[in-house]
Image (tube, rainbow, N blue to C red; front, top):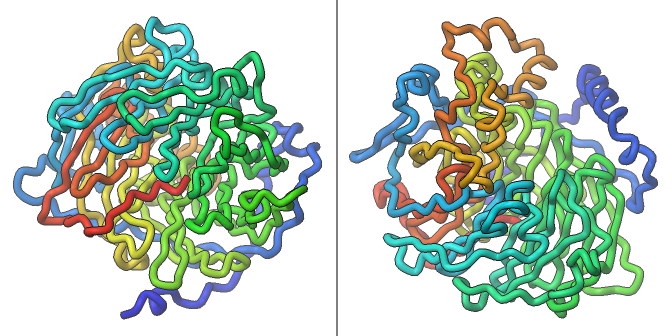
Length: 529
């Protein structure tokens, strides 16, 4: 079957449910800044379809020799394992750990380049610690990882949230400072030609002395590395920063997007940006006039695609090519929406064609999700960031699936995806005095149950959540005792190996079994932004 045969006609568009409208109205009322700001972008070009039937879970991995699998529901860490202490030893299916370096924690989104890893920082610990900023891990000898530097430029010390990204073409590492949810004008640009010893390029512009007029929660590059984009959750400001001269970054375009203000992906031509909605969907923008540096550039909105089958906080998009087809793998962070598979070949008519979920993400398992996941943090078994093994005709997708660990899928056929491996790291307890770059440190400080709020909200909206059942001792609710780690970052490909960063366990090198994966000769990791 050719790849052009993989995508059936789109289903008939359906109106959003009234309950979803009421939820949106209630939340939007709390965001007057996003409501009252006049957008610089035109109205949506089209409505969008949603799933006509609820998605099923992907085929689970067949764990081979040497595996230490989770026994039970796919993606779940059973409450019994948490109570007995078994979960603290971690789990692996068709994966082996090569080495790890915990450092001060893996941040929220970390990144890598060449033989080095860069672990994201989390405010306020990153600003007040004795060794503040982004830790650089030298993995030239993958069996013996070592810390080679700490990057303490203003944005790195202010907390990098989901902005820490590398552009391989220009060998640049960039982050925007995010001390709270949307940042405050800080941007740091490093030359990583020598990956273990990054060199700061902008020493004035992008600092507190000369801040840029940007907000940031997310950030990422256009493929050529000359434009770094930031999006801020409030007031929904999308900004394009010119890095043609990386010593003097400058803003060349901005637009207010309201509630469309989370992560994004950019296609490999640098012409199209797929911006995530905070409520289940993406918007497709033509950014050619910005990347071509046209005077007074326009950024027309080509289309919108929304869904209401859970996943109301869309994270980012990974654009890839199957022959002449453009496909997006789009993780959803809030609720149990999984990873959406979108045919974006026609940017004016994107179509939702598949959803990748683990069994724990299915609506009928919502109570179990909350019961076993409580205490690990505000997010439990949600997808977060993914990376494909190559941008054209990819064969595998690896995702940080929060408390479900790192999940790896065979995506040669995007409509018939199956899981091939997973890895949940051994638990390293959070110590606020040393693990200040772990986002799980807050639950350790508070010391009380922190339930999976997105999953609860989605379950309540659907009438599929029973608070009594979810909180029953019989189901083993656990307090904030760090019985699992959380893997938010995109696992980045190095042949059969993956560079992985998890909240408490830090930077790790893991290796996939040849039984389930052989790296393509032209492998090139694609994170999407």
